[in-house]
Image (cartoon, rainbow, N blue to C red; front, side, top):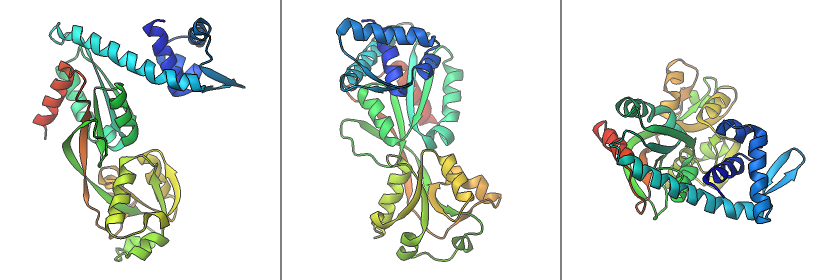
Length: 294
């Protein structure tokens, strides 16, 4: 078994699609398929179920995926350690971030880091708060950035910024007039929210609970996996949403959305890292750059 075989397996397992995995790895679909088949035949274990033109991880594949990710993380850590001996003339830095941070807070830091350390291979993977935390726990990322709070005692968590959630509606929605909102109004409204597991949704639901609003009674018409999808959907119908002010500021200013008269508490932006894993010089350099920009 080689590291290349593990990388191919992990990519296919995460995407559940041979062609997409091949494209991401810059390999042919036949090469990816042959690699998976060789693993299965060598160890006499089916890692995937073939269902028509689809593939799904088998039970054995699910177990092996965790070990494969850990092995690749260890190999990447070893490579980084050697690369650091070259005074950052080579190296990698893998960052995972939830959507709001990735789209509206991190880009300027990524650009400045790349300009300062052009030889470092910097990658960004975008997910939600839960997926970012899992990436750090499993060693798939050096640094993670999330919105809101997370209960994960195994991780080191550092506050790095702040964000304001706002409730917005379409201009013809009754709430656009700025009328004061009671708990009953919030429960009766139709909402479009980010998916479960996102920091935006978690922060909003916590704020509702703190106000005494029963979260279970909220009428959520749609849960969508991106800020931009939520924003577009609210603009198109009689819905409300809670979303970062960074995402909707220009649309409110242009009159495409209106802020409702509900004040939500600010939420924090946090950096995650694994305290038991080696902190690469690239990661330390990124943290130093970030701290100078606070």
